[in-house]
Image (cartoon, rainbow, N blue to C red):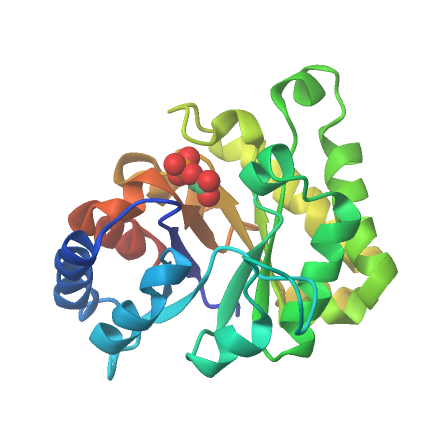
Amino acid sequence: MRKPLVAGNWKMNGSRESNIALVKGLLEGSSQIANAEILVCPSFVYITEVAKQLEGSSIAYGSQDVAKEEVGAYTGEISVGMLKDIGCSYAIVGHSERRALFGDTDVIVAQKFAAAQNGGILPVLCVGELLEEREAGQTEAVVERQLQAVVDLVGISALEKSVVAYEPVWAIGTGKTASPQEAQDVHAFIRGWISKEDAAVAEKVRILYGGSVKAANAKELFSQADIDGGLIGGASLAADEFISICEAAG
Ligand code: PGA
């Protein structure tokens, strides 16, 4: 059985003050949630403080990105060693905003995936198609290309120590969610694609759905056979809403 994971991607939001209130709400609300793992990914700047507040709780924390290089003259970058040093257990790689706005190509995403894993952190690999790609019937081809780049670099078995997040780009921050069936179809495709190479890995890897998940639609999405939780943006910034989503998964 795959334990569901609900991950909050706070993106470039928050302040010391607002984070304290948010984490307080999460700590209060998470005590009733036994059957889902909860992860928060604050801005790099705040991870340490959030970590302190989470100490002793079962809520995990991670980063929204990681450098592909290990160490050295890379101004502005954050290495996996640093993330490990402050106790991160996950790092998101290949988020569509990084792919679209910051030049993270399939190859760079694969390198970041490898860097995270080599440094002992579980990558959360985001994949997903643009609206025009969906409309052109290219969803599966795009997702396959994004996965293939990672598998080419690290091999299929590496996926076992990772999480995949299917996030249709047209559903991120737009209020448009893929229908549970649309999402399930792509999740089943991803699991089937992995299974062709290694059925055991396919059975184990958690595949999250992301894109305008909220308390009102989470339950139906998470009840699909191949959806193992969610990667939540906007709705992860309100403790009550995020906890309700976690309840829907657990
Ligand atoms: P959203 O973002 O929930 O605000 O659509 C999801 C994501 O970008 O991970």
